Image 1: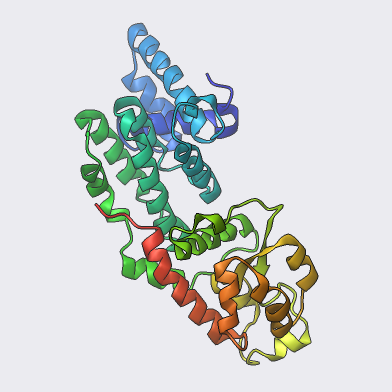
Image 2: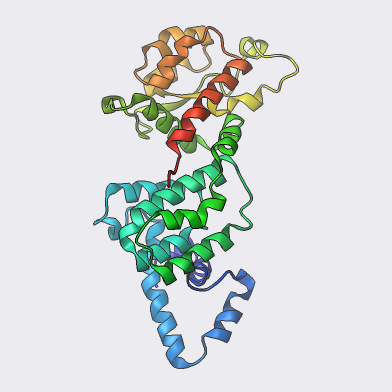
Amino acid sequence: MNTSLVRTGLTRFIRHYWLSNRKVIREKDLYKVICTEVKNPIEVTNFVEKLKNAAEIYGAFEDPQSAMWDGYDTNVRENLNLLVLFNVNLCYPVLLAIHQTVPDNLEKVLRMLVIITFRYNVICNNSTSHLEYVYSEVATWIREQKPKKIKPIFEKMAKIYPSDEEFKGCFEGKVLPKTGSRLARYILQEINNAHLGDDKELVTNLNEKDLNLEHILPQNPDEPWIQTFPSDEDISQYIYRIGNMTLLGTSMNRKQARSSFDEKLSTAYSQSKIKITSDLVNYSTWGLEEIRQRQASMAKVACQVWRLDY
C-alpha cells in the first residue's frame, strides 16, 4: 500500500474504494461486508491487487505535489489543493472512478467538484449526510457508462449544486471562522481577479509573503472603532464577514493595524493596486451597513466566479 495512506487513513481509503465501485456502507460494517462478498482466494487476490492500484491514485488526491500529476495541466494540482483547503474528501470516490475509467475527463470533473463543494459545503454549509450516496451513485455510474461527455456527469450531481439564489443568499451572510485566513484569501483573490478581466498583470496570488489578509474593522478593535457600531450590535459578528476583509501588501498591513478607517483609506487602501482594496475609496465611513453592502456586491460576483454552465 502507498505510504501516503498513513496520512489519509487506510480504512477511509478502503471504504471510499468500496463506495466508488459498489455502494455506500457504514464504516463499522465495512470489513464484515468485505469478508462476506470477497470470499475465495482468487477473489481476495484480485481485490487486494485492485486496492493496491487504487491506493496510488487515492493517496495522490491529498498530495497535489505527487509525481502522479506531472503529466497533467497545472490546473489539476491547483484544484486538488483547493479540495485540501476546503477540507473535504467525500468526492474522492468520483475522482477515483474518473481516473480509472475516463482519465481524459479528470481535469473538468475535478473543477466541477471544486465548484460544487465551494457552493454546497463551504458557503451554504449544507448537510453532508446524503453526499456519500450521491457521490457513490455517480461513481458507480461512471464505471458502468464510461461517459465521454461532461454534461451527463454534471446532471447526475445537479441535485447538490446550489442554485444562484441559494448560493448568493448564503454568501451575503457568510461569516468565516477565525482560523479561515487561507480560505478568506482564496475567496478575495478570486473575486478580485474577476474584476480585472484581461488585465492579468494585476492578478493576485496566495503568497502570504507578498499579501496579507486585512480586516477593515480590526480583529481587536479599540474604543473609537467600537463606538462606530450600534450598541445593540455584536461587533464580533462583523469582523470575520467576507465583506469586512480585503487584501493588502504586507508592509502596509503591518503599519495600519488598528488605525481608523480614514487613516487606512488615505495611507493604504487608496494606494493599493488591488482593485477590491482600492475600491474602498468609494466608502466615506465603515460600519455594519457598509460591510453588508460590500458583501452583497461580492455575492453577485461570486455567482459568476463559482459557476457551472452545463
